Length: 109
Image 1: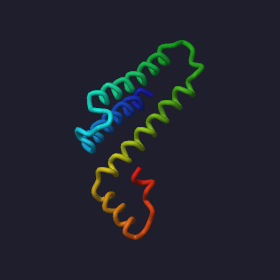
Image 2: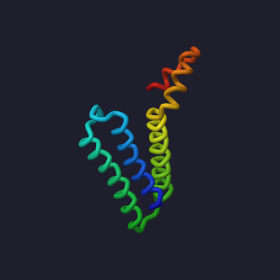
Image 3: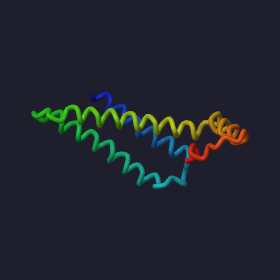
């Protein structure tokens, strides 16, 4: 599970970098506030894991594993979403679909 948490931590930092790359100074929330939020999120995941890891009672093992797995999937999908927003290939594909009359309004959100 430690490796999954390291993956979650890395994904959060990659998302922070991609968001900075995408929005620059127009980040909402601003970079300093976002860095604090992301650092706190990473710390919370590690605190929950360490609390569980050192406790004698393993009654919530399935729940902790599920939370970590869902966080890993969520942040992976968010990273992929940001990459597609930044990549000109995907932007051109969306423009192509719009020219063909396909509604992509949900993709822009």
